[in-house]
Image 1 (cartoon, rainbow, N blue to C red):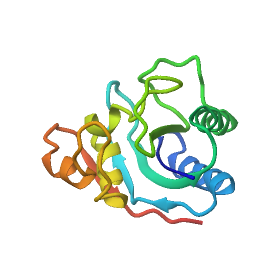
Image 2: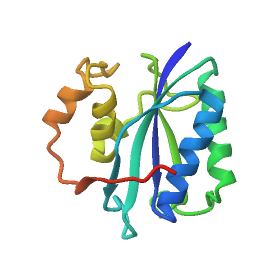
Image 3: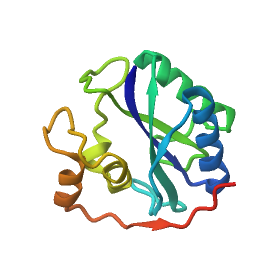
Image 4: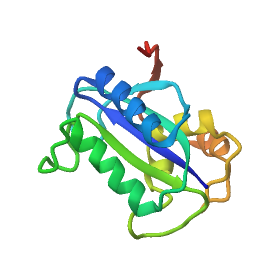
Length: 161
């Protein structure tokens, strides 16, 4: 059974889509460990603010099967695959880590966004502070404490229905 961390994001009907994503992931993976929900400005384009969070789960699925499942969930909530890479979206689910696997195919693991984006690193450090990043050898808590990029991000109250 692999321990996985999943980044969730939305800036279109974001409360609904974050709630729906957590519900869908729970159906496939069972109990999840959830970070707080964070609001952040769009990064890489001018757009509405995002809600972001990280979920942890255990799975017997292979990496490729996890990625396929996430795309199916995104598509079921109206993800536009023809939109520009940096654009608004109903739902974005990214596999951040799969145990300590380091690979480029079928997806880059660990995801570079972990150390690049506050909206990934802060919630990851919240739920996995002592877990060690497979490439840096540092805990997510240490990486967050050392994070020095300018990204506006703040926790928001989230009413789970």
